[in-house]
Length: 164
Image (cartoon, rainbow, N blue to C red):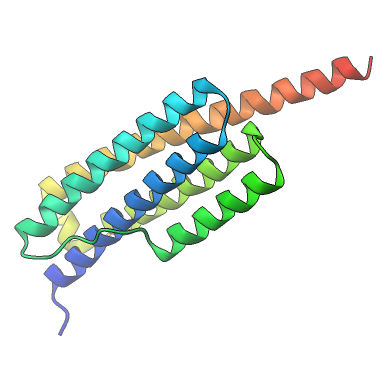
């Protein structure tokens, strides 16, 4: 029989996996981009997810569970997608940002799923932790979307100038 604690541990481990996938994705993005400005941003997001995964792992251990140590299957799909896009359009900032956007949207959905669990809602500490982490990822997503939008506009402006 699955208990509420089992459900909670599973949800926390899924969030750990999502954060490991996010770490892998942002490391790959940093490796695939020439722009130093994005490397620093991506490294900040790697650090953020490393801290999140550590915090979640501590909570899993408090409940007697064993934290996972790898990426998710969906994270692996995200990694394959990032690799494919990077190979097709070498060092294309907009494409890499698009892949990062997809990854962060996936992470936010995972947090939303965990936040809807009864056991999480019954614990103010978990609610606070997960809301805080989700909020940080949401802010990171806004940064990525802003950078992507700027990149798109700059590209469009350059096309107009080239056609004059």
